[in-house]
Image 1 (cartoon, helix red, strand yellow):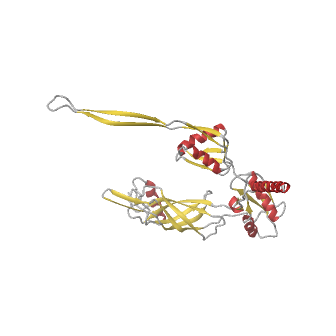
Image 2 (spheres, rainbow, N blue to C red):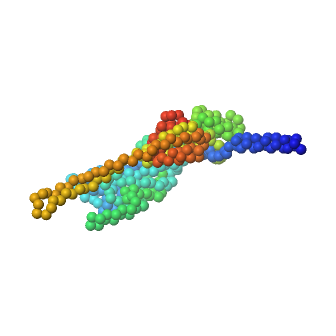
Image 3 (cartoon, rainbow, N blue to C red):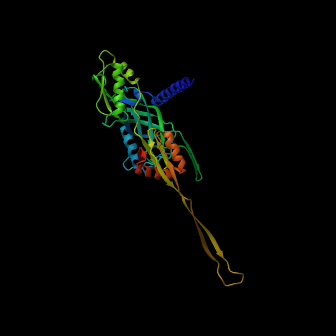
Length: 375
């Protein structure tokens, strides 16, 4: 009987050991689509910008005496339309505003395609509400015109003023025109000309690059992809497969990215502290205490009695109170994951502003296993 009991105990111990080892070996894997991890080299948008005029404002345009470029733009536009103003004409316009027009030209955009544009006042116009943008050429970095913009603005705000009182909701000097620009020139792409396609990881990481290469070669065959460095991966496109279909299948691959660099982001202006899952903490002792200085000043008035020759004297009396909480030493145990680190930092009882100094001291002491970045 005793032997049977010993045998059962030994078997249960082995089973427990196997379960513990299995639990430790199991790590959840979160796969992401390749299109979320990398971009295709050459497939990108291009910024466009243009200078134009908005007309039809209800007396909320630029004050032309303070914005001479608005008057110059109006005179130049009228001359192009065959209207010549007498020399020395002083224009006092209230319904015109000089603006900058911006948009993005997406990849593979074709002539005739509509683009949304953002119109921003560059003078002292009070509001662009109700205005109409006149035909404005939009240029790229090479100086070429790629789109033309024109249309009525939509401003997501409202304002009113009367007798010195003024109220305003949202921003009035920026508007938007849906499909307000028309593409006039397309940007050439060589994605169908080369047999090789380069993928660029959004974050440089050698481990993730190796995992992406492994996933591509497993799906499309060996020697299909290789990593040039920690960011660029060269892929050999098969000649027997349509290029668009191949890129669609490539972007749909699921890849489990490598664990990122342990990093703690500290915003010194707002006191925000953000850390990722890879942050760990070694055992450390932290001493934390608060010192509060309070100064109260009250006026003291000394008034002489009636029918006396004295004068009323006003002085101030200040009381200074220094309250120092006793410092305490807290031992923070080593934490292997983010939840342990958060629990350890909460045990200190420090405010977010205090954590800035504490985290910097931890990093200097070598107990914070993460890169500390202050923004």
